[in-house]
Length: 73
Image (cartoon, rainbow, N blue to C red; front, top):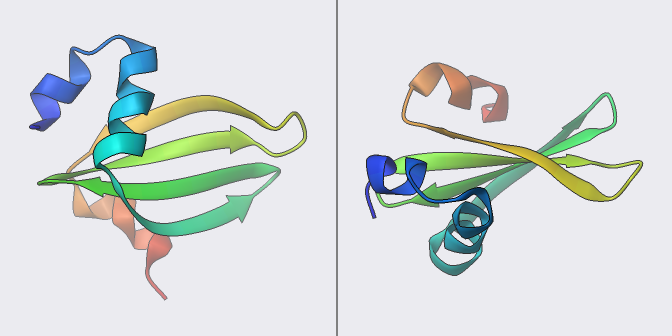
């Protein structure tokens, strides 16, 4: 799957694609939000969870290295 194929999926299918095809890389927490990073082929998807409500609140598909910086030591 390429990033453009991912972007045209309906929202629920995006999450399913992450669960089915993604490789979990790392998880970070900040201000009550948990950010889980997954790799799918040549792009990444960051899933955003509201820790207080225990619900998914968004996703961010990307290829830019700048977004990865928060996961680096």
